[in-house]
Image (cartoon, rainbow, N blue to C red; front, side, top):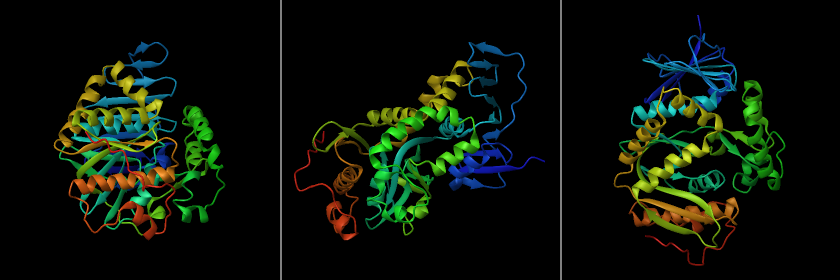
Length: 388
């Protein structure tokens, strides 16, 4: 009898993974917050065994497909869609293929998966979508220094149509430039890390070899844990005294990005802009294999691409109705430490204007000193808000 590992994503999507699937350990690591048991239905079933192919059509040398199945030849991955949900089969690392399938299931349940750092402040959900490398992980550490802030996630999150922000406390990837912000993790580190100046070149190399590594699940799992580019750390280890929050009503969304200016700029934006950014940023941040899964489903008419994005956009449109949304641009020249100081201060400005931040809460520049981390940039100069 086959044994399964089960997952329940906020009671909105469910998955089971065969224990003997090569990817099982990796999926258990990455989706540990959603481990479950005794589920009576599974929206996605993951195994390591391909099902027989019969009566297929061919999309050049890349795809083989039927009315209910598509096989992606280069990756040796099979996606099947029937009335019970998705089945995903393959011998490689399947995390990158799981992500867009769960994303799709969630959208049909009125929940959108987003790429964002998230915290809860006294019952209010703060959503900080951003590109990778902007400073989300550094910002989270400093936000948690403020009284009343709870951790939700530093990279991925979910937003329901009723404007509830849902957390994802997945493993964090701490890089060499995070040393000033997470000194306790580096004090007890168990492996050597590359110097900060080599972090980006190594990161680019990792991106190039990722499609090859995904064919070998054990190697992929070892790489995530022991790569000299980063440390893989559980949120509880990164923030041993933090409160972990799993859900909160959305108060605001602030999109963070780096730009080539000399001063931080905060601009109020409209809902349509934020919906577009959330969808586009999520799609850009997932791997090429995840993107190919969406392409393959559309090419085989199992899931029209326009429907995939339209349904998710509709969820986000309802979720953001009446919510204040902003774009915060931070100079590219700032280090992660400097940028996170500025981001925290501007978040506090937004919360104060919204009447959410209590008047007796110290500003970021004072909270940093009071809680033991030093500022690396002078915020005494006026910040160019440019609010529209």
